[in-house]
Image (tube, rainbow, N blue to C red):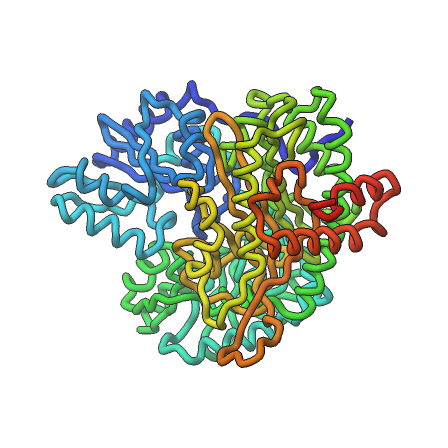
Length: 610
């Protein structure tokens, strides 16, 4: 039988312990003279995925999603999540302790104004909130006469008696044959770009940016090869790099010391204070810099300039080597997906497969490539009603048998040194209903609309987002998540600044990798999502065009289940796109798989009308 090595199916939620943990936190707040405390899902770098030692929100509330905030008062508590987690959160937390609210529609600041009173003190950990987030909290408190109070050390840590130790993953060098550019050249580019600003030094608070700039990777965060650390880069001269020395072997330390002054993390506060004392202005990344960093600078007399870290865009626009690496990774990953899908089609109709069986099998097929470093996130594998939970993660307690007449949604990805993948397929087990086929086809039409889009340079993801939703809207349907997110190169599977969503304001630039994943979810019944990764490229020449035009190249190679398609709902152009895509999938993957999978592949990629 297959096994999973990079992901666990244990349910770490201790729902029965939630009330006791909240009571212990309330006692600690009383001891410190605080009336309330806010607990975000964050670490010192505002990472989406955090090490176990930083999972404060999950420990306190039971909620394990990647976005959420809790506020605890003496007599009530609330947990905010967005639409992706509206079903999951009710399964994980204790409703007798936490009320559930919507993170976007009624954000914490609104709740604070309605629930705090004059003179009350709301505690916050300045390391776990950005400067802007702290300002919003302070403004909400001031509106009702309450006070926002920084608390160090974190009061929750004082009652978290079994808190895991901080991570000490080894730092490794990311070879230039994968990076496509030396670290020295990157640092020079960063310094040249930063020289245009009025600040004296750049604080690099995002570990993804640190990893990219210095061509290093790490193992501090599950599924993302990150070394947690900071860097400070002056306009001129050598940068400083702050990494725990226990993570560095002699070869890595030697390479890094050729590029920068390497210090222990504790030295960061000392150096920021010294820069502040000297009257320097430091630029902080508004998306990831903790309020504590700004406080250290300003308390010493320095100034803070907020803006976007220039590395964000540099990292997002892949160079030629990274692009070829992405293509190679997707060919390799496509072959593993084809083997899995062929196996699934053989085994699922017998009625014995479970969600865990499918997750373990897919990971095993990827491990067979012998170059898999990790999965890029815990696989989402939802059978029937579990597929309607957007970020569902199967546990031994929730594990469901995959039944006939159901849809099975599997969203997964891989980390290879030459690229990061992310692919979702929705598979029919047995005969799908007419409703399933109609709604799947509307999702597919939206997916194709994005894939075929041609758009002027400077177009943002928000301008494209409605293309993916239009056919669902026509039927009074929608999905409560973004259509696409940026993807790193052997880094995070979720990368800024670009995304295809209602909030995606960054321009899509050539060389960016972005997902295309519209969906539909019928609560208690099934979920549908179709996801491919795209590369932003130059559009084919158009006669008479007056603007520079961009388009997408689809990188993901995996069949889309023809059994769930209603061809009568599709246009001739949409059918042509699907047939051409399937022809490319078959031609690319057939030489990479064994005869049994090749035969299956030929059948599932034949033209839609055949």
